[in-house]
Length: 234
Image 1 (spheres, rainbow, N blue to C red):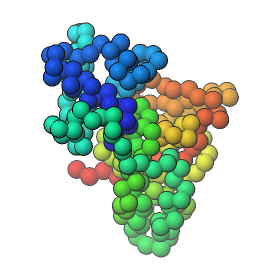
Image 2: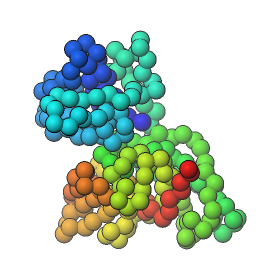
Image 3: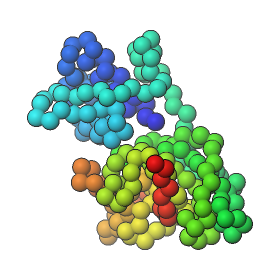
């Protein structure tokens, strides 16, 4: 799932490649998106790389390659990227968890599957797919409200969290430093990262050297849950 800006940038790059044979410059991308700085373009490109839509060719300037397009894109609809309207929910998960059964009731428990979460550059929101997933009680480890999210991206690979994994999350609003958490940033962005406290600041730390640690004031980050297990199908 892409944000509107990510989708718009991807379609602009794809169209520029088709028409000229080379990718647009950062200045052209910044102007097309109406951004104030090139750093915003860099963040969007990194997010598209992480999700497998873009690749950069090493040692070549202006060498972006579109690996795939969103399912919503078609030959006739590519020119309408600005009209892209993803189906999203707010980053606050509290009201979504009432349907989960207690871990003490059965050998397996149904958890709400709320959508995809970026293990990389934060996404604006998660899609409400309205599904549930059944997992063994042993994965939960303790009572409490739990939910599941599909991991998108590779920035937590050194913590053993891979693209496509299902993250089992115990709902909480606090976590100790070093825990892997679902973090809500500025009430709009949601990401899966390791929590570090640095004085009065909060650092959201990836587990992949390709990605940067992001640091925020304490009023900008809300903990939405703590990772307690991973569920993986081969």
